[in-house]
Image 1 (tube, rainbow, N blue to C red):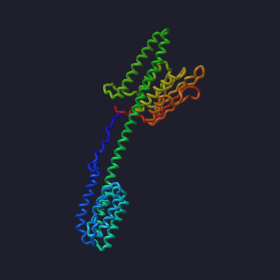
Image 2: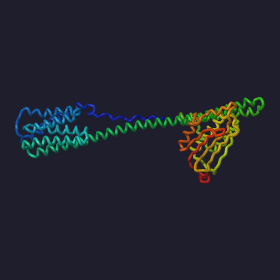
Image 3: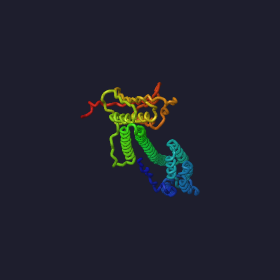
Image 4: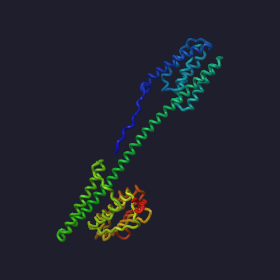
Amino acid sequence: MDHHPPTPTPTPSWSERHPETVDVGVALLALVLDLLLGSATAAFLRGDQPWMTALVPVASAALLVRRRLPVTTLALVVVCAALAVTSAHPHPLVSVMVALATVAQDRRARWAWTCAGAAVTVVTLVALGLEAPLLYAVEVAVGVLLALVTGVWVGTRRRYLRALLELADRLAVERDQQAELAGAAERARIAREMHDIVAHGLSVMIRLADGAAAMSAAAPDRAAEASRLVAETGRTSLADLRRTLGVLRGDESVEHAPQPGVEDIPALVERYRQAGLPVEFRRRGPDTVVGPGTALVVHRAVQESLTNVLRYAIAPSRVLVELDLSGVGVVLTVTDDGAAGPSGTPRTVDVGAGRGILGMRERAAMYGGTVEVGRLPSVGWRTRITLPSATTSREDLPA
């Protein structure tokens, strides 16, 4: 299974690593700007109360907690701005803008607009009540609107970037999950292949070895032939197993043989016939070429079905393998008349049990097919696989 590199985590900026330092700098900057700008615009206001000199520093100091208490900070700064209007001292308009921008970043737009309207209303009403020029109210409204738009834009961009990071994390998790699923599917495929190779090879070898042992005295020539077939089957199975393991290890030096298909079924049937199974193969329909994937499913199904007959059927007198290509798909039927034992014991393989039948179902499902396995009404066993796969006439193939 391929291992993907982890999704890189963006490095936090200097301001994100030192938020307290940034807050102190913002508060000092707001203090300086309020003192400079306020001194130029507050001369027209009445009163000269010394204690109001502290309103701008208080408003600037409130900005130190604007991240933790944004709404409370805005309310305090607006109160300071409203009180400052009644004196000839500078008023904290910049602090109001910073506090409002902070609220707009972290809150919904409706809440931010509400706070902005409240701030403009409070400061403007106080200013107009003191007969301040209309220009002052316009100044407050423009400053508040600028802060609101800036805060909403910054907050929207921040949420957008956060959503992108969350999406990247989810995609990374899904990518890893897909890789795990692909690895599990590949392991299952390898397991099916190994099961087919080992079960088929060993079943045939055991049957041939038993026959050779039984015929060693009465028919030594036939026993020798059976022994030769045992060795040949073992070598073939070992070569198939090595190829499968080579694919699993990614070994490019392993020779890749073509996958078995429909054209190899007669040779497969003959191998079981040599093992003593009375099997017959019939093919119906036109001379067509089955796709490689479907052909492999059919070949493995024949192999698994005949292996099950060889292992579990009790004295079958006839085994029939029928391949029907006359329709729009492929229908494979394997039947046998394996009778019950002397004690009346039925076949011991239940429907759906065992890795072999499960492997057939999984292979067929990958191509939209179905598998029916069960006992016949009288005696025997039947396996039927239906694959809705189109075939191609040999006459339509390129020369």
